[in-house]
Image (cartoon, each protein chain N blue to C red):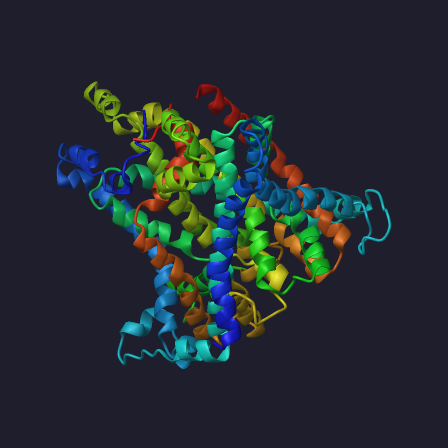
Length: 320
Length: 320
């Protein structure tokens, strides 16, 4: 590491936090001459300013701009109306992308929640709870890129190397080409996603589970309820709000899935999803208009989730 | 049903009282199914990671011809050569440093900026407070893809593409909504009297923020740090778009994705060249967050409870 890099490293690691702290101290210095009432009026805006500057520049303005670009041509030079959207809708591969995204939405969301719930409930009953939970959480800390490499080993065709095919070989079955045939390959990619995200669902559901009163469950058991009845009639209804939180996050993750597909198949063999289609349109085909249209479609798909999120937030505020 | 929000992290994690009480009522054999299920789930979850870990220590020739499970049959062949190769040949050392130089500021800035805004939302009065916060809640779910094209465009126009600040600022924008949301919930649940008496004693908002709010919010901030760190550390898309073409500033996920690409890895039986290097590279990639987690056991779970689940599964969140 040369001195230039070292100097930059110091600047980045010490300088950047210092600047943020100095900013807020400077605001107080700025308003020091004003009467207290004026200060109280101006101060909140100074505290909010950096956050809303970032939100405006990096989220709100780009969203509007993306919507505008989606009705322009591939170089953003002239207005083309809804041609980009019509071009997408008229393309079979777009509908395949939608089908794959739908598979992600249903299978990924459903299975992550079910396995997460099972693990949360089962680990709640054993002494080695923390160990199992840590183990299942590990993939969450792994990047999608590393996960792609890891699962490359699992899905490798050669039964001498690929774990899954080696497993098949021991029972005398033919090796399978896991990632080249639709729809099996999308399912295989979804399995990677499940492996990564169950830890997330498990942690939150387990936290919710700890919030359910033990007396309630014991009372039900003493009254002769079976474990299944306790689960379906008491635990599940009480966990419903937590499941909704997990569900929202997982649904958004499913819609945004990019890395797994990008690293493992690059969207080849009909595994494209909305987010990887976006990447291909913009950065491989260089078609800004069409890519923006894909982004807008993704945004529209997320709006219902956003509204549910806001409504739930407002209900909670009302309860406070 | 309340989750003890203010309770120390450890209380959340190692609460064994309940499961043990249940365990005491049943004979050990009756619980065999439970233990078996958990064992199977654990093995399935661990298998991919172990396969990668073992492969990364095997010589290239062995990885290319035999599966990782044969590593424990004679003759034993283990080596650290892959790690040495990856570090020296593929810019991995630089990428590791880049990852740190990207991740540390991209974690600090959004958390500081979010804390300022969250403090204003919690303890300052200004018109439009609720509307603005609902806006933040709405922005929580915005997919990156919907903003990426304009963000790239103005980063190019500003001439910051291919530099660290481009990535810091982008991650700040994208990470802010969650940070503001989580910290506002945490600040907002602190006792009002505490701040009122501080202000009566003449404390300025900056004093109240740095001396009261921030120290008390350490658990929430710790979990936010872990989240943002993991997200930036593992991010491929933002880095690929903003610094992907600049190997001297590219972080590890980009370098590894390029490595996977350039070595022509695909899923047909043929080419397996360089598997050993992917393995070593990928293991490096997944290490820091794992270390990070180990130093803060339970923080993550607790943060999640505070940030998300607490708002839904508890009636009232209060500091202990």
